[in-house]
Length: 118
Image (tube, rainbow, N blue to C red):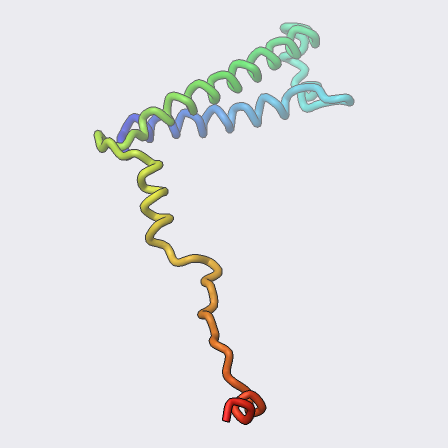
C-alpha cells in the first residue's frame, strides 16, 4: 500500500470515531447525552446545539464518503494493464467442473442374453 492510501484510511477512521461521538451527543426521542452538557446548552441554546450537531454529523458523513471514494482511486494496479474479464475467462477454462459427468457405462450382457446368443 502506498502512503496516500494509509493517510486517507487513518482520516476515515478518525472521522468515523468523531461521527459516533457526535451521534451520541444528539438528542433522541427522549433526553440525550446533550442534556448533560448544560454549559453548551446555555451558550448556544438547546435548539442551536442540536442544529450544530446535525450539521457536524452530515459534514462527517460527506467527508467519509468523499475520502472513501478518493482512497479507492489510490489503490490502482501500479501501472499493470490487466483486463479483469480475461482473468475470469482464463480461470473458468482451467478449473475443474463442480459436478463432473459420470463416465458412460456400457451395458453388460446378462446371462439370459448370452444363452440366447448361443
